[in-house]
Length: 225
Ligand SMILES: Nc1ncnc2c1ncn2[C@@H]1O[C@H](COP(=O)(O)OP(=O)(O)OP(=O)(O)O)[C@@H](O)[C@H]1O
Ligand SMILES: [Mg+2]
Image (tube, rainbow, N blue to C red; front, side, top):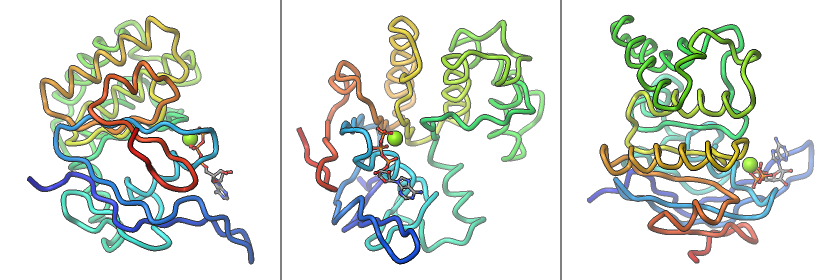
């Protein structure tokens, strides 16, 4: 079976003027459809950088990232956006919600962008917001929500288009133990019911231990643990 995500000889450096900071070096890694994978590693080791490369938000310095066998860096912006919205859901570390829009619109947006029927999108978004416990926050804007509530809106937004692979950067980082457990249960349910592959960056070993494979990002490389 083909991989949903594949990184080959992936290298990445941030350039600042003349100087370069190398963050990832010759990384090889793949995820199959339906697989659950965790990445752990110290703050600053490059976890968010790796997720950004996989989502095509940055381009590799060397090497390739394939999403469902397409080399994402080789696509133009429109094809890249299409590939991303077809296969990937992304929960950012700092959620990136649209501040001027309600929870309901933030969650509906991935479907509205794909020209889905507006009413159907709003119904689906309402249902998914209920699932993350925010049925009483549908019309709140991000500035009117707590940090954990914003995180739950971001998770609902990533789940709504039923991606083939969910990329989540510390999805429970802002949540208390109960809410973190609920979110984890939801994400695992998505994996079990829809075969959504999971790539979760986390500092929480109890989450990492629930995945099929665990990797540590250390010294610019991924080691299976
Ligand atoms: N835009 C940037 N320009 C230069 N250096 C950057 C940039 N973004 C991140 N870095 C550096 O790259 C390294 C990796 O950052 P990254 O955000 O990927 O770490 P992380 O593993 O996600 O950390 P955390 O667990 O704290 O979220 C860090 O040393 C960071 O300072
Ligand atoms: Mg990070």
